Image (cartoon, rainbow over all chains, first blue to last red; front, top):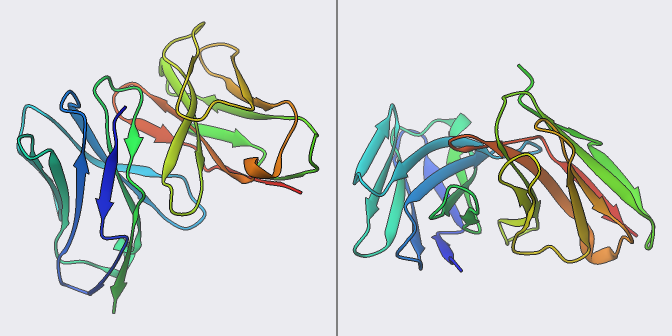
Length: 111
Length: 109
């Protein structure tokens, strides 16, 4: 099955700086890569996703890049704000059903 | 629009007791899922239902059963709870992209 590794496990950034989280996947058939944000005591929330037919997607301050050859994808958050503090999860799947999740990255934005 | 609703939010069980976690979605999604979340392990799929009337095992199905009652509802049952099932359980539904409920925090003592 698919195996997704996520790094780093924790990330502390100064407000206004950028944050980058990287994930690698093992199954070359995977074609859908969503990112989730989880705030304390809440369920994960889909923030951005990318399919294998594109290399980059942006939505305001967040962007995701995908390198299918190297089998890795990354989340970029620019101009970080305190409300960006949360746990972020990457995931991968080949059929839109059985998502395989990374272990998560705890992001702390220092004011 | 409530999205995905899970009940209960918290539950404490004794070893060997049974219980059912309820999940309902109002987004008319075909697919529904049950995950468990443990520290440092991300989310692991227990069971999923690609459409009404079908269910399939995920990564960690042992000790659980599910029922897709109708298009809206997907329940998770623990027949004989064990301490290893202490976790936070999330239900999700999808059409394109998965949407999660608020979770059920279950403790088995």
